[in-house]
Length: 304
Image 1 (cartoon, rainbow, N blue to C red):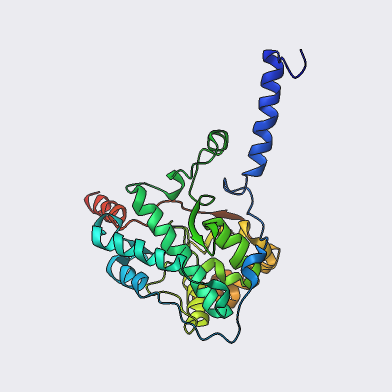
Image 2: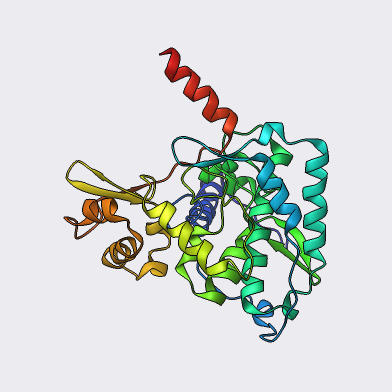
């Protein structure tokens, strides 16, 4: 009968196994084996270098001032569980206003600030919508069951979260199809925040065209000089997995990563890095930057 195909159970398992292997390779980046490539979404390369338009990020700044706290371990955490209904709605209205921005009419610095603030605010909104969660990786993006089965994680990165200039845009789009390929600045990795302990610091104020360079440098210094960025362990150097995932953005080799670290190191970190010519290991903590979790952990340590 034409158009009909019969598979034996063995052949069916073989085909399914091949499909699973292919999917596993395609999603290796999110399971930590590699990073998504920086491939420019050409639509967003348009800008107006003479534009004086300033995007209003005050609502995002208000949210950060109310709920972001610097804990004694030097990591900024959010009081997700304390966010009021009114402030959640205000965050939603901020994102709605961002969806109405004509991005192509902005100058490059204003665009950079726009995309970073949008990424971070969207991430916080996604977490709030699913809170309580232990990790952002526990949040489903509505992806394939097979992909989720293979990786053991889902995450919201590939979900289309907002409509901008008639285009559906997600977190991976912003980071890997716009910011990285368009601006080619390794400090972008200190700007976008995935709401995880291992991620670079979520800043206490929005990015703007005026503060852009200063806040990018500050983010680099905060991360490089914190143990989650780089630390000596035994006879080896352990760095954040960010430097492995995006090694091409940091010079393409461990030597390039070390040169980058030394550029932003304070005297104590520079002394720690001095003996090392390569990197021994990398690590990343996907635990949510939740101040409530930190408080419970601190109390448990005190009781212990």
